Length: 461
Image (tube, rainbow, N blue to C red; front, side, top):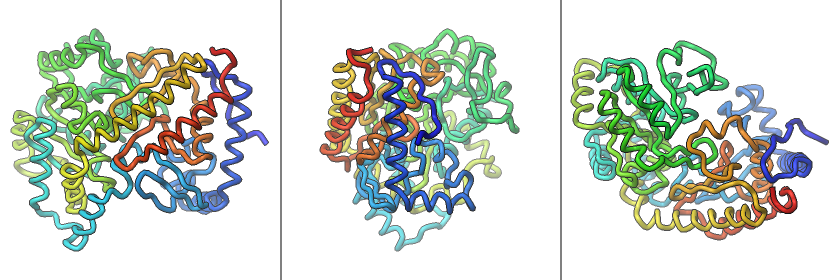
């Protein structure tokens, strides 16, 4: 039986072998997961596309992985399968699914109350520690990174009196209409799958390619951009795209010269180090946003501000909420978990462990690429590793589109998952956690080598 899906070309891969393997792995997945399939059919009657989040249906498996429990850096599904989890919920579970320090903090807080809408010592301890790590003096709590970005951009517009924002092409900053824009030959347009609705991104946003300082200067010089919202190292498109030498210094100089605020989104880049890329690269943003990882799995986010932005924000919120915040932002459960993460989990020892495993993972993948003479590369940002089907790292995410090798990514994901290893379902990236075992990294290396040996064109690309 052949399932729908035409393999897209990837350099060095035999298309016929890819088609055969992809169909075989899809069927193997379905046949081994009858309970997951039954639950999917049941879910179709009450969930969009039969999944609790609509984009789960866009992941590689033809029947979604249905988790029964998660522990450490492992997943267990309803059909009795166990997996080494390198996806780690796209950094939301970066510290593991049940880190002892986070679990102990949450259990203690449940006995003290889950929701109060009042201040607590934990709030002060968390914001003091964030200031120490990231260099900005004032912080506010949100329920997600999306909200952190939404509020940061709202403040930027209020502070500057400007309406437009600028993002880098194909960056992802959460479910914000204003940032759901991409760059095409026709200029800025809504991102694929986004219908124009309420926010006309052609009027509200400017989009340029990462590392393109000339385009950035042209976009900022008119003086109509409130803020640049930037991921300091781009990670969301299936590759690690680093800033070129001098890029961040020039970005900071341009934003200051044009009166534009600089917002750094550390939601995906925290594997770089205990102070994220902000500390590792010596950045000086006006605002920082973050979420997912910060509370060890409890929904939460934060945004930090410079003295100047905080003063303007204080005036803006003096009589009312200004459209900022929500009832459960900074709730006791999330903040207790944040305090545990910041003080007990995000240590130098934790990052040393994550980096060591990531280096091993990177070496394993690079060795397979070299063995088969594939024109691919592998990139790493601290404990995060991605390989992409280009010979050298791209300068920007636009170089990754139109996507090459999407069916190969699906086939590799399924091959690995059918044998007990789960990667990020969107990009194929791997994350290391303090609870990841070296044996699981070794298993991935062996399975990746098997899969590529079965798919590669003999003698190299």
